[in-house]
Image (cartoon, rainbow, N blue to C red; front, side, top):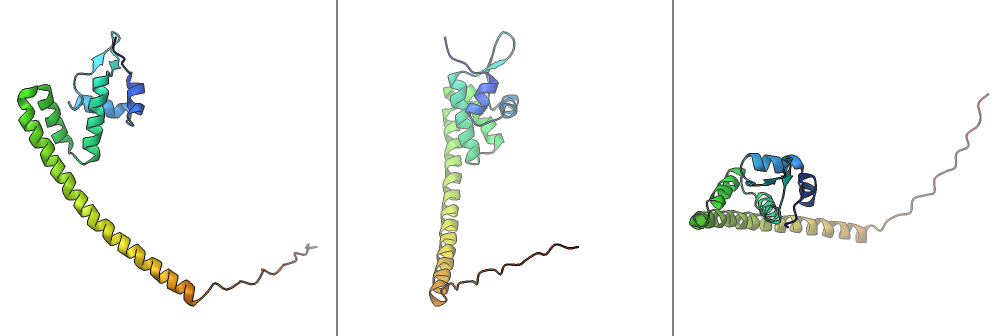
Amino acid sequence: MTLTLSIQKAAPENGLSPDTLRYYERIGVLPGVARSPSGHRRYAEGDIGWIKLVQCLRATGMPIEELHQYAVLMQQGDGTAEQRLQLLEAHRKRINDEMQELTIALELVTRKIDGYDQILRRARIESPPTRRPAPRKVRIRPVG
C-alpha cells in the first residue's frame, strides 16, 4: 500500500498552504491528485515530487502560464518530451541571465560596503573614541 498524505499534512511538509495546493490543482498545475472515498485529497509520493518541482520552478521565476503548459505536456506523455525540454531550456537561460545580473549587482554592493568599511576604519584611527563624562546624579525632592 502506498503512503498518502492529506492536504493538511502535504501542504506544510512542502512549505505551502492548503489553499495554494488547491489553487494549483484548480488551474491544472497539479493534476491527478487522488481522492479518498470521502472525497478528501490524498497526495502520493509522486504528487509530492511534482509539488517540489513546481516550487522549484516558481521560486526561479517560471510564470504560472508556462508551468501550466509544462503540466499539460507532462500529462500527454513521452511524445511531448521535445516541447518540455524546450520549455526547461528557455527557463534555464532566464535563470542564468538573472544570475549574471545578480552577480554584477552583488559585486557593486560589496564594493560599496568595502568603501564604507574603509571610511569607518580611517575615522576610528584619526579620532579615537572619547570617554563621555558620567551622568550627574539628580536629586528629586518631594513636593509639599
